[in-house]
Length: 194
Image 1 (cartoon, rainbow, N blue to C red):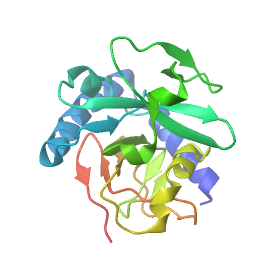
Image 2 (cartoon, rainbow, N blue to C red; image 1 turned 180 degrees about the vertical axis):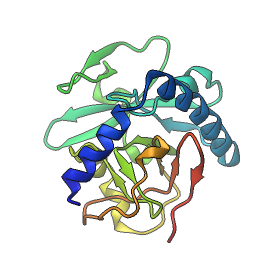
Image 3 (cartoon, rainbow, N blue to C red; image 1 turned 30 degrees about the vertical axis):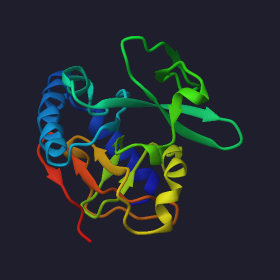
Image 4 (tube, rainbow, N blue to C red; image 1 turned 90 degrees about the horizontal axis):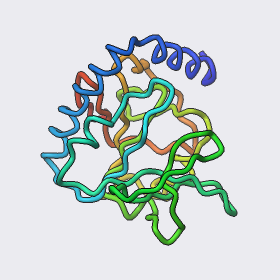
């Protein structure tokens, strides 16, 4: 299978989930995220707002009272990349060019990826080796390119978040891909094989 055919297959698989399954998976995911975070106690965590049947972090975000949560904001200045804005009751919203809601704030109100403890990342497909297939824009890979300079980083930890049905036996890895440190689904917490 080509990368594009894998991406199309898992997008269709994800979109075939019923609203009941989507809601149930989000609630089960919340439990597994809390379990994972209880072991490491991070302070600054990047999350995302689900689109196109991605597994939702909304139950976890709504129930969070101990971590600072940051959401991605797309910047298209000299290079297209993500920065992360802290979520609060006062967060103002706008939509980026993909019509995805994001915080409406200035550059100086955002953090670089390397200033976060954990990044919970959406994906289209994953494998147990820590490979992630995203939507195809490369925004996370460009924003996390610094991680390719060495094998082990203390932060941010990159955690893919997905429905268990998005698991692929073995994804191809491109030179620019940044591997995951873990994957959390509604069923389990996966630590990649080395």
